Image (tube, rainbow, N blue to C red; front, top):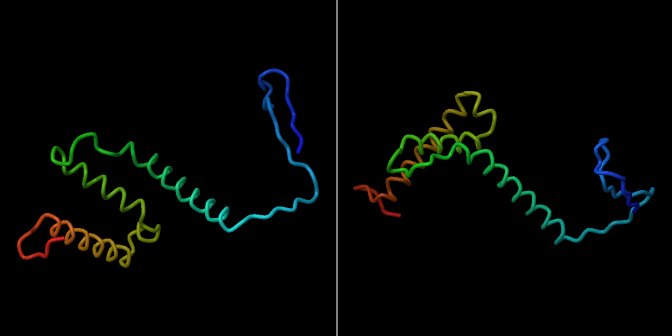
Length: 120
């Protein structure tokens, strides 16, 4: 491991501080727990990135004030999670979206206590 301190503030494009790992061989051991932590970190970073992408589209009013805006936002989330081949308008993709919508509507109606539906 070699550390370098460049004079000044790195205005010439070089960073002020550098750490470099030099050597032909590196014997590293990684435990199962470290691999699992790395996987959890990747999942967390993916969620954070999705939140960063989606938050600007989130309506600023309550759903009761502008339900249409919230439905658009929900659709944006669904389309964001939908595989690319389904976004391209294939019949199979459209059928999947319709089934998903029907499942969602049924659950929503049950949560609202709609007549003739078993409450959740």
